Length: 169
Image (cartoon, rainbow, N blue to C red):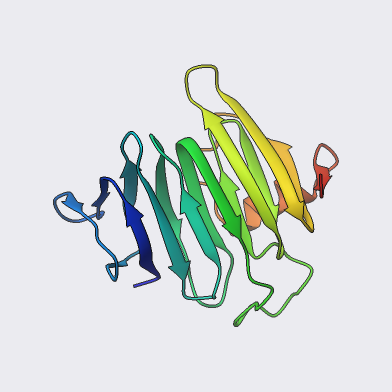
């Protein structure tokens, strides 16, 4: 269990990697590999084990790809919008210069080290957009051939020459 549902409005379903879909409610705990999908006029606010918060907007879909206690988490945004306030509490992560959380879409990867930001992904035109409200987020384009990147691969991408640092505003 890596994330707890703290607010739900409307209909949001969870599909664990092993199991059937179910409608989530406040207090539900979710595991790695779970797919969350919100319907029209619905949203969910999540509280992760590292004290980070994330809200999934209406008509959106994400996968809690991985969220280990001693390494960076990976969240895959399949469609829609998520807004997150990532804690600077790095738990067991030793290297404070590494990204604490990765947000991945089909076209971009973002490395987060403790900030407040919003990501939108439109699967129709494959456009990823990012707005940073506090701190900064490293962002880089990725190719579709990276199907299951791990933390090291994503860190290389967001720390590479092609990455840009998206600062507040």
